[in-house]
Amino acid sequence: MIKNIWFARLTLTTLAALTPSNIDVKITDENVEPIDFEEDVDLVGVTGMMMHAPRAYEIARRFRQREIPVVMGGPHASSLPLEAKQHVDAVVIGEAENVWGGLIEDFKKGCLKPFYQAPSFCSMERLPFPRLDLLHKDAYMTINCVQTTRGCPHQCDFCHVTHFFGKTYRCRPVDEVIEEVKRLEGDFLVFIDDNIAGNRRYAKELFTRLKPLKKKWASQASMTLTRDPELLKLAAESGCVSLFIGIESLSSENLKDVNKSFNQVHQFEEAIKAVHDHDILIVAGLIFGLDHDDEGVFEKTLRFCERNRIELPSFFILTPLPGTALFQRMESEGRLLHKDWSQYNGATVVFKPRLMTEETLQRGFNWACKEGYSWGSIFKRVCHPQQRFVTRVLSNIAYRSIAQRTPEGYLPSLSRILQRMNDTIPLQNTRDLIQRVGEKIAEKKLLIGQKAADTLKLYSIYNERLKTLFVRLEGSMDRDGARELVERLKGALHSNIQKVILDFKDVGAFSSEAVALLSRKGLLQTEEGRLWIAVNPPGILG
Ligand code: B12
Ligand code: SF4
Image 1 (cartoon, rainbow, N blue to C red):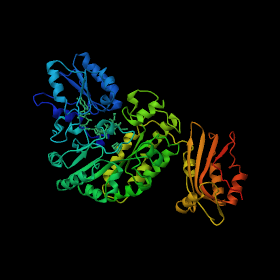
Image 2: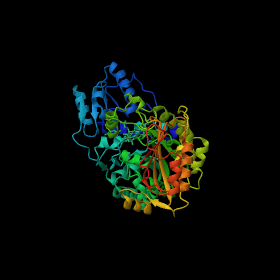
Image 3: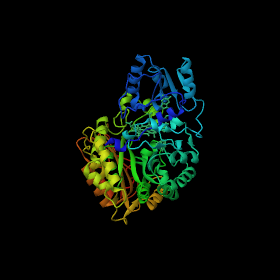
């Protein structure tokens, strides 16, 4: 089943292509076949993502026992070369294009250096085509993988790409990409770029040139692609059938925190619809455990995927990868639980979340993976009148087989209550509203006029560690609004909640009845040691 969605990385096929042709090369991808540790070889190269590091070191140990030198490269070794060097004979830091030939020469002379790092990023012109012939074709959904660009113009805090490629975004000449695509067997391929639409002008040219080849392709792109209708149309016309898009979070605060504000939450639904309108299937990356995520995040995110018919939601637990800004932050805040890299796999909690416990995050993630690929959820997401129904169902079945391996999870008990808490309360009666007194009346008036003339919005998050519910109120409040607020707070009361903090700063107007009701219920009190604490309570009484 996994084979149905698994494609080959270009790492080792690229290295093989860079190797002088008089040297025999064999590729073993341990994802799909066992390693022959007795193989008669002169030099071993290992690669891997961070979570593969312990295994890579073990592989190195086995070959070095036989006195076969081992070289390691890839994202992990490049971020932590000193660590890697303890396990191998030489470490390649960064791209291999400009150093691999020299390394082989050194090896032949018996003088391998401990570290190899090119002084600059390689040119994207005339890169040799990867040696796809060295892969076991039948072990993958496809071996037709092509890279058109390296890097990404964005700098999301959790992503390793910007760190590795040093904020560069380099494009291969379109002619060379087209030539490589033409040589592929079959009509489906994967562009393994991190963001295929990072340079719109380049992407438009590429897609236009791809059209006549009549291939189908899948790739990754950032949300920004959906904001250019011409680009999206060209992508579809050139054969794009599936895109991995990093939505990451439904909270603007989270996105801001991780430097991904170019993802605009209020545009998500429209953007997803635009992609669907072009008959492109969406694999959505969604992260749990960001600093504004509370127990409500799991169900909220899954229901969002169902409502928007996201074909393949991919849930991840936030993972701080060495080299990234996120890792530095977590480390300086003392929030990393350990450095067992094998657990840094996107499915295991390796840090202290801010608003929930490690266990809640792990179980909630497990729940989302299992529930998201339950038949009921699959049905809600795939049953819509679009083409490629069979592809949608089959890929969901494959994802389901992976999801079923996830350990048991559960939906935190507060989840639904927290979601209900955040629904907007409509105002019935705006006539008797009294402007809030304070320094910023004019500003407030504007706020009321523009944003919240007839609603009371609730933004609440629950901090499981502090057992406190924070509720920020925004808009205006009449008697019915106040009643509804009291009702919701009662509903939210849970044995675990020890304190509720209500922030009235952004409530621009109250009716006198609302204030009276809130006072009667004790919701305007500001003393510590009580269940409720009001912050910025209204300065009016009347
Ligand atoms: C394709 C891909 C996948 C595929 C992998 C399919 C497969 N068969 O394994 C899929 C979509 C499944 C995937 C999944 C994941 N991926 Co991924 N993936 C990629 C991607 C986009 C392209 C990889 C590739 O082919 N690159 C092209 C080759 C040519 O580049 P390269 O690998 O960097 O190799 C060059 C150099 O590094 C160097 N080099 C590398 N190895 C070696 C070894 C030697 C000996 C030498 C000399 C040189 C050398 O030489 C090469 C030429 O210059 C990369 C991003 C990227 N741009 O690389 C992320 C990337 C590798 N993935 C990443 C991550 C985190 C994951 C996941 C853990 C995500 C998650 N949270 O679940 C999972 C793990 C899946 C798993 N179980 O293995 C991270 C790794 C970060 C890290 N520090 O480890 C990357 C960098 C993306 C990112 N956003 O940060 N991924
Ligand atoms: S948009 Fe995607 S690839 Fe680019 S930096 Fe952000 S997460 Fe990484």
